[in-house]
Amino acid sequence: MPLGDLLKVLQPVDLGANPTITMWNRVEGRPRKADFNRALRAEIRDPLWMLTKQWQMGEFEGDDAGSPILAKVLLDKKRLEKIQLANNTGQYYNNDVPLEAIVEQMNIPYTIAGIDCSLDLRIMMGRYWLKLIKADKDLALAYVIAYPINAPETPDDEDSNAILAHPEAWQKYAAAAQRKMDGYTFYNLLKGGLTKSDQIDDQVLIVQYKNIFIKWVESFFIQPSQTGQNAYLPSRLEYQFKCSVTENGKEKVFEAEEYYTGKLDWFNLTINDGKAGITADSLSVKDASQADEKIPMGENGFTFIPVNIDYDGMPDTRWWKFEDRKTYLGNIKPDTTDISKLLFLEYSLLYANDWFLIPQELPAASVSRIKGLMVTNCFGERTWIEPTGKGADDDWQRWTMFTINKKGKDLKEADNSILILPTVPKVQEGPDLERFALVRDEISNMVWAIETDIVLPSGDRKKGTEAARELNVFYKRLYPEPENVNNETIAQIRYKIMNAVPENWIPFIPVHFDGSNREIQLQRASMPRILYGKDAYESIKPRTHLLRIGLDDIIKSTYFIHEEEVPRAGVIVTKSYQRTRWYGGKVYLWLGIHKQTGRGEGQSNLQFDQIVTT
Image (cartoon, rainbow, N blue to C red; front, side):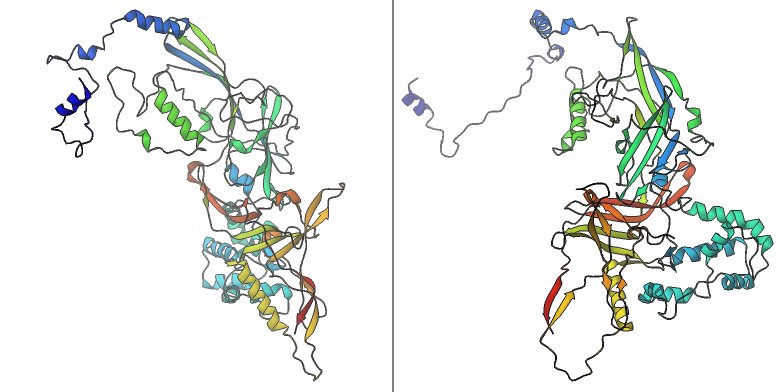
């Protein structure tokens, strides 16, 4: 039809109001009868074409048409036997305490800079003893007099200024003095062999309740038995420990060199083949738990009937059947870095009835290795399947999950064992008791440890800046600057040797590392506190227990931090109480230290040789 004639036919249609004509249709079979049976058969006109496509795709070459009807897994299980914290002596491991509590435990400071601190804990211990012996009013008063809480009254002793400078700390000491019993002092005396108090006839009470009181104190907080017997390395600001199992007559050592995140799991450890075994100083070994006693150790087999994995939203393999609409995978919006979500989506959308699940119960504190899997199909054929991930440990094409790599760069055989650490899924963390930030100051060419949170001797938390300001004002009231009493002419300028920085800024200066010409370390130093009316200046010492490493020891020592542990981004170190439950619902409480990326570089404005106006 010519174009002009076609336009005449379409002339009644208003092209301006309706420029396009949309037609809808459904892609489906349209039976001319009321019977739908034939339409649902999915008939194929040329079955030979389907066979040729199968031949073209190589499907006829497969020899796995049989369905599995029986399977057996050969599994080798070993328990963790020994553990070594940092550079301390190793010990035999038992599963009575969560591994986090064993690794992270720190001593609670009851004395800092020569003064009794942790007042709240001292009062708690004394109150428990009086409640344990059911003391009446007179007996309780006698214990308070024999083991009193002492409160400083005058600033004669420099160590007491940490209490007097802060009103809330001094008020609590003054309120508890001569009214509350110092339970920690009494506990130390009992540990030392006290059988009778000097002023109280309590020999019978001590014999009856001594062990109960000591056990309660030591079980309330998980602490190292001796000072320094923990996994914390102050020079690295992180934990380090090793654990081992015996496998094929040889001790396999799992090593954690950089643990500081607070979440302890298999990925924190590496296998060190070149490491010597752990030497333990104890001969007693306890069972892990009553629940684990039912699980056999060693090499054993587990027979089961394979069952297909079935999950909501799984692709259905039947014709003309859609998946359950209740599972909407479109709501999952993974980021480019969410590998686990992407794998989950790929599995959910592609795989249906060709996967099988083998449940296997593994105990805590164990190392398990799958020797292989024997599968019997419906034709009676048996197939031995070895675990994946074999080969060199450094092979980038090796695919494994939840396996531990080996330490070193040489080609080593991969380890396919799975480590189940005796850890807890959730740990409740209290507020930060201590917190400091390590920042680099390029102008002054040093590193500063800024105490942002400290603990007062009374047990209260306080901001480091506020505490430093209160202490500085307290000293200025004790030693005020003298006024100009003569009539000499005052110059308009004066020479100033150096200025001051806040007292919560602790300097770390770079020093040469012994035995190396290039390597340096960061050594803790002190800023001077210059006071008018005093013959000599004082050194400002840190008030956080983490920065006082070596200051409160009988023989004082220098504190060094490795230079590479403080990057340009800085480091923030915190200490807080950790609480969790273990087997049987038992509660464990300990002090833990965590490290994270810091706040960047800083500037202290420390200056020398200044000319300032008067």
